[in-house]
Length: 477
View 1 (spheres, one colour):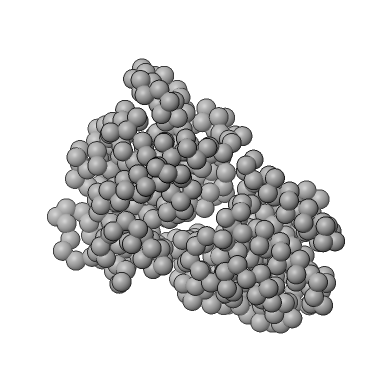
View 2: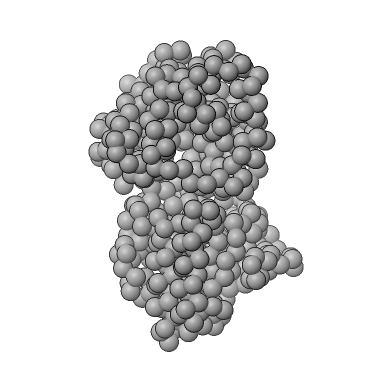
């Protein structure tokens, strides 16, 4: 099967959706599919081998300029291709700043209008390329926000078109009126133009069904997955029975990784049940919606208690310019609480650094303020044998029910979060057991290979003539 997979680049940051799309495309290719991962807006950035095409559709520079001056869409083809050059887009977004809600709203609405928007020329270019050059058997989109082109594609070819639902509502919520309402109406229209929508959780399927007025038979449940190979191949303190014996490598001395004054030896996990310092980790974008400030306050409370007097907070993730003041305020709060030597920032880690970072924490916590639709960091931590403590909302209850690798606390309850830290710190064997159970279940049930097989079955079932019955994985609501 020939698959065109459109994925939205994230302006130079490590993006969970981009990394998932890249891993899924690799897994589809490994299964024999002719899958081409096509970046939209900007090139993607992933911490694993990048399989995306060296070209970009709806390049961010072109899209922005055409929003300001639609006549620029009629520029000669060579100049259009120059503005879409991956190297130029990487350069332009290296120090990207936040876009105003008003401008973002106008651009979002225009993009969702597809052939009726300011970027109509970009839609035509994509449709021509799909119909004349690649000629796919199926099309997958990483989210509905890039699906304004779907009606035009539908008119040009009869192939299955599916879209992931993963955070579309959160983006729309950021917009201001009247663009929020307009974008939501258009999102429902483009969703109706697809053959199916893929979700990672029943929670998000139900939420988006209500928001977009989608029927049950349009939804397909595809459990969240990661590429577990790097976690299985690297040395780990997890018992060999937790993963395939042949995949566990012997520990070996490796150099240290340094980030802003904090060092961890790379490679094998060094955390022991008897370690007097209980290390709490955070691995996500450093942004208010990810709840880093909640983690800081809960850590300060925990650090006051007898069981937390030697606790440490280690955090890593991408930091955007628009959130630097927020980040500094959180660090100053920790310093003011007398914890200056007990919190450490580890930068935006590469894959090897991420593996080392995870294995040197006793527990991971990303207390998101919003209802998280995915939670890739949960699977990554568990794949490394590290249990998690998460708020009891969004996709987290389903992930922990599936993996058994952590604890849930009431959302926004910082005392309950501190209590959970204290509980696992006081009972290290239980903490280790949660990590081991989570690791086993991720390696068994949440692999990218299994997800690729499910996605391929869905696409096959939707090919003409259209199937009369939905494939396994349909959400029963």
